[in-house]
Length: 113
Image 1 (cartoon, rainbow, N blue to C red):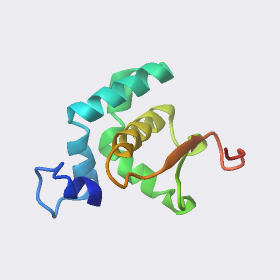
Image 2 (cartoon, rainbow, N blue to C red):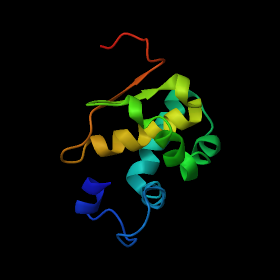
Image 3 (tube, helix red, strand yellow):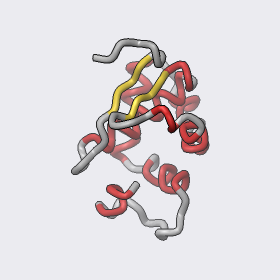
């Protein structure tokens, strides 16, 4: 969120919560394009994935303790729709200066690349 704030991606005030800011990012053309690609690649329905966005921060925050240097989306922890939404947010910020590294895995026990 800090990087997005520095890049002036938000119109909401600084006191807005993380989820409010994710909701705002989700309305940008950049995110919508990436989300559509994720939905198509995964064979999902756009509406079902979009419905996950308003509570995605809540879902992720339940499992954030497992991530270290590289953010990892564990498919066993989320629905396929949540994984698509998370991947879209992370893909979007990948092109920003100092974007986070991330990967997606089926489970914690899966070998890393």
